[in-house]
Image (cartoon, rainbow over all chains, first blue to last red; front, side):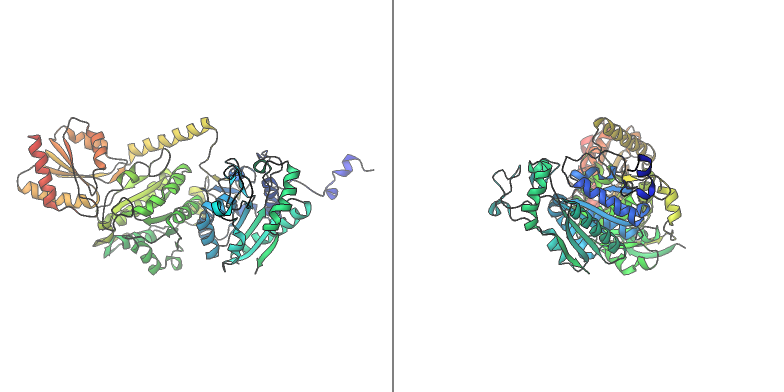
Length: 254
Length: 361
């Protein structure tokens, strides 16, 4: 048996809070995927040693306070405009690592023009797209990615195609564009998925910085509050309902 | 070396941008100002000064690209015309809320709606009263010549950075399209990384080397803190009103009647003053150069000697509200203006002033 002193020796260290993560307590609901994605993003920034030349663009939505949690320079964008803001920064500062973090309402509804054209120009930025099929911050309304039949505050009878249109596959759309060099869909609902998502995120940041074009990383995520499920039920519901429609894996890696 | 040329107002904006060390232009085509971006693309400044010029997918994207570049402390600008500037209202509010400097050129045209591509001054309210949600102001400069289109690009950037606030050049379709002799300033180099760090390192996002992180944001959920921030903004506007008023007076010393006009209307007003003086009417021209801050005090200082003020605008009467706030109700004021893209003639202005004069006597 090792005593405490031996356990905390540096050579026995297997995991630590990343340098880039601040000490601010996160405001997210229990079971929300945002915290996990923030954590792996901080780890990627640490691993690549880019804390001093990373600039993040925070969205409007649940992640609006993202700048509180990662110790790098941040810009808070208007709703949906993060890819345009990222373009302005990256074009005038090619030596910075620039990434935009957006939810499904931000990216796939109000900001469709900005994301499509940033990707189409092949801006050398990384897009992190959180898809939980619902508007979390405003109280659980329908998102463009809400599944058919899914109940939300604005589709209380469930989303119907004839009334509300179809769930929007943003990743598949962006993967068509020559400006996008890496398009992948990940999740963070199991330890294995978290590790895989982190690898994908690291690759995305490296490729964008190398000037390959836009990296687009979708993370299929939970919203236990919006879905009105417990954290464990939300993970299960996501695996059973979201993943068949939004399958995980790389769509493009050029 | 400065240099004399015959140029269009829109072309000179592009030339002045490069010469004043601008780092980036983002824009979207719209008549009557498309020559700004066309000239930049022709001049290819990325090969000389390193200035970025990019055609965006919309005015919404343009202003947000400006927001991004400005967040990094860069001299960033866009240009558009009335309907395009309406689309930028959201971005302008965010720029003001995040205290970011930038330049927006509005070569205005007739509205409302899609309106007309002919000249207009009907965006005065939008420019001077905020032009977006929340309590904010743009610094607004109104050129009345191609020379001023050039000079105000330099001035607008200087004021924008001095106060960390967006600045607007409010021109009109005539000033944008007409050609005049212009003296181009000698080029001012773009800021080096070291100069930029020194000037804006305390707030700009440039990567957090050797300092704590910088955050550009306009969100504050605690109302008490947010009120304090708003009070700080208002204190800044008060300082701008105190220090940055600019205006021009022509034959005002003995004037009994003033023509108050800016932009192209001031040029027409100048001719009208000449015609009126030739007929023995003691008329003068008062030309606000800064529309925000409005030159209320110098205008009010003239009130005692005057019998009336005629506001001449290419609108249904917008600046006249600021004129009335400046001089109060003690002095007769009247509006004369054409709108919808029609430009008034000096003779029409003369007739309007004589009508005001007849009512006053």
